[in-house]
Amino acid sequence: MNDSQGVRHVSLRSGVYADSVRLMQVSRDIGARDGVRAVLVAMATPLNLELAAGMGLAPDGEAKPDQLLIALTATDDAELTAAVAAVEAALAHRERSGDVQTIPARTIGAGLADATDPALAIISVPGPYAAAEAADAIAAGRSVLVFSDGVPVEQEVALKQAAHEAGVLVMGPDCGTAIVSGVALGFANVVRPGPVGLVAASGTGAQQVSCLLDAAGVGVSHVLGVGGRDLSEAVGGLATLDALAALDADPATERVLLVSKPPAASVAARVREAADQLSVPVRSAVLSAEQPDLTAAVEALLGDLGVAVPEWPSRPGTADAVAPGAVLKGFYSGGTLADETMLIAAPVLGDIRSNTPLRPELDLGTDLRARGHVVVDFGDDALTVGRAHPMIDPTLRLEAIAALAAGGEPAVLLLDVVLGHGADPDPAASLGPALQAAALPTVVALVGTEGDPQGWSRQADALAEAGAAVFASNAAATRYALSLIGDGHE
Image 1 (cartoon, rainbow, N blue to C red):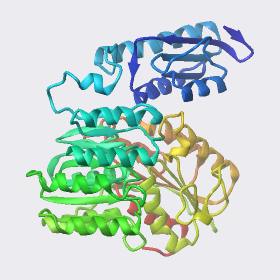
Image 2: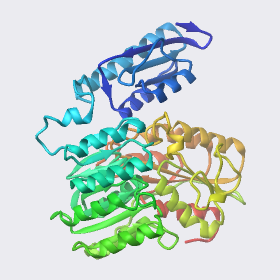
Image 3: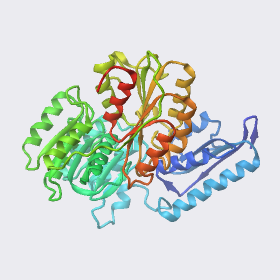
């Protein structure tokens, strides 16, 4: 199909299911090819069909959510043919590896009906469909990890109440990271096994903590993500309380660390009261104005274990002197890390604008730009509708870096780069050239381990070569950025 925008291919495939994260990776890889102008490889849900229509790639006729949509635009027929072949090859590879497969069962309930093992059910479907699938798994006596976001809070509460009554656990919704009995799920890192259990209402917070523990030679027994809303007033910590009880009953867990963004005060008190009744010691890494530092919480836990605090890995930067009047621009993929940065920096810098602000009056607005101190969470749900998380697809953040450089405002750029399963296989490959082109003094919080597929040191060296100062600790990265601004903070 030809038009002024190039040539198009739009097709639907029936009888095939693929995980949305995997399809986002396929879309990203194909979109990076020369000659490809636009690509969407996704299940044909109403949201994805709307996105396809907005791209001028709507399929002809009726499409169903259980069909796979393959939609591309390229500069010419040769490029289009090559791109479609690359999609087919990627899907065929995933079919052989088991990530994409023809499945007779159309629901979680049907898939578990004849299962005899106590498998954990993982739900990664659009939010409007997730609760029904999770309910089927709970009814079958399985714990559930709900990777999906966009699940209404009242459905989350109902699922977690049902799970409690059934003696199973709901992790999520919007649970991006978990490690269960050594099996990494979602955006988890390769960390050693050990005695520390994490209960986390924060994916990147759990990654930061588990990676620092690994760097100190301490492993984890389990990382139980509970979803970012679990400690809200609306949900009341339902999954957190069940996860704490599960770790208390686990003989491999000797210490527990609770990780979260700032919670509702009443829920925090309820959880603290429950934790005090457990036999396993529970330490808090719940962010607040009084406790703004995840690294400090890890160091306190190491003290509990009698383990010496190491010198956290870092790489020096090559930034020239920072211009007078420079402001902080934090471009984050992890919401908890963005919160941590604001909690540390605000007492020094004053007001910080954000799309996830510490106070409502500091809301950044929809264009994500403002002069002065700004921290943007590019992983916020509002920015990931219909597109891959920035840990997979760096496009929005790279565009923001280029716009910042072009705007001429003197600034120190502060970023997180999160490694691990499911994340960009080589984030420095795209970020390094962008940093060199921007020529801004840059500080990077690099969250990961040497065992991760990307390799912490390999990524750190590449980012340092591009001029960035690199820290394994986000708190240390934030404080170094503040020192570059010249506030005298140590």
